[in-house]
Image 1: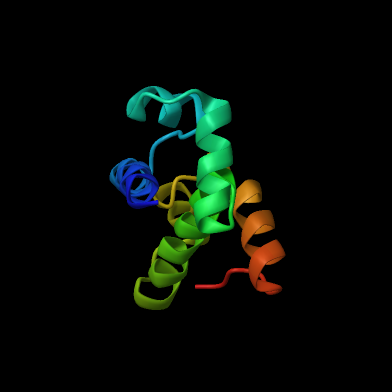
Image 2: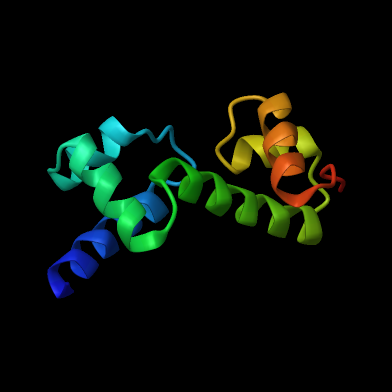
Length: 103
């Protein structure tokens, strides 16, 4: 159990360090030296979320802070949070928070 916690901690640290970059399961698995299938299972078992869901939630948390504490346009905030398009950012934000992002 302790080993799994250390492994997931390493995965989360990698995700946090690369949050604004393009992240997918293959990239993360390569970085932490696991197969993507093992990583997916282990991450979901330990966190209750898939790596993809965790990444999206973390990006949205960062974006929410920018929305609250900056005057940047929504498009710029979405890009800063790691989303490639404003539509993707707005759709994901609205799906999770049930409101549209506003600055």
